[in-house]
Length: 249
Image 1 (cartoon, rainbow, N blue to C red):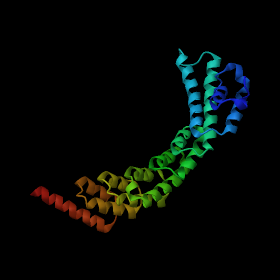
Image 2 (cartoon, helix red, strand yellow):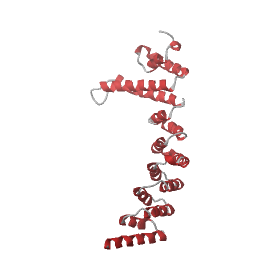
Image 3 (cartoon, rainbow, N blue to C red):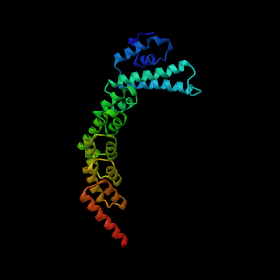
Image 4 (cartoon, rainbow, N blue to C red):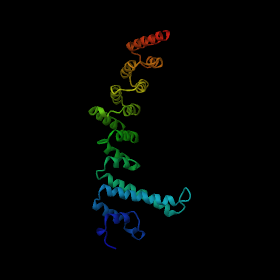
């Protein structure tokens, strides 16, 4: 056999992934040689897919829910280890956002991938960070709000509602709520704000917005229940009186 230094990246990957049992003793050396070559992200993805393919191949051979043969169980464990090792390497090689989302699915690498996404993620990716890594939730929410501030066309009411639901920081929640009210909210979104314990000031703004949208009797009573502001309550009573009068006609 030729020296590892003369092998192609594909050949090294096959040795590393244990495709040739006769070269089992060279797997670690093949890994070091692969790292020395600094293959592209595309090639690392191929290596990862090879590892996953080996795992799936063994699973398909099982006749029962759990592998009976020890070597089958070892292949599964090994391929997962190899896949994680390859993802770990990819994480250090300026992965794309799409690749970072994939890496976030590996529990031991989730936080590192999420931290990288924080600096350059789009709306969906930042929401993923908020969902998957709780201690980064506030940072991701702040990034989203800054993104929406710079680019109003990117504002997403579902994302703003999600921030209000999940983040426990009053300043962030209020900023998201104000932004939601300026972004053509639906009645349901406004009612969500009224019920979300967002503070009297923001709830009052939400109530005024709802009052401008021909609220139903039920919605008017919701405002009375949730907003103690005197002027708002007076406006609600006037609206209720108009509704009662219209029924009489």
